[in-house]
Image (tube, rainbow, N blue to C red; front, top):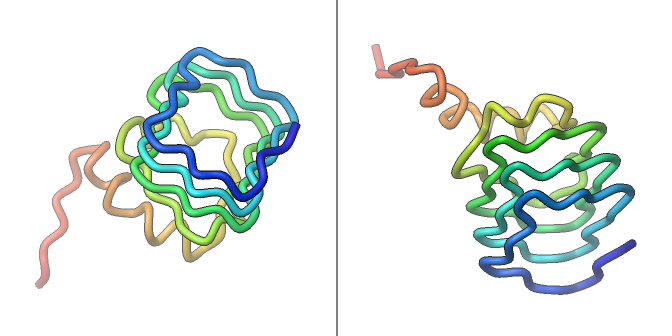
Length: 106
């Protein structure tokens, strides 16, 4: 299944089972994948902001083609996802907050 050039704002995929789904050139804002099972899902060319993945199970979920990636809730559920080094740096503040790490300039 593929979604092309769509805007998904405040869409609820909570507890859904998504397998081999592609979001191509989409805008995803406040999309809730909480407690969902995502397998082989891709986001080429998509902008992702305020993503919720708390309690989700990800297997081979590929964010590498996404133009932007921001997770608001459940960053610890990204286990099983694939990101670029730049995306990892963008996610660093959320990872730090999730483990209680305080980052301050020296």
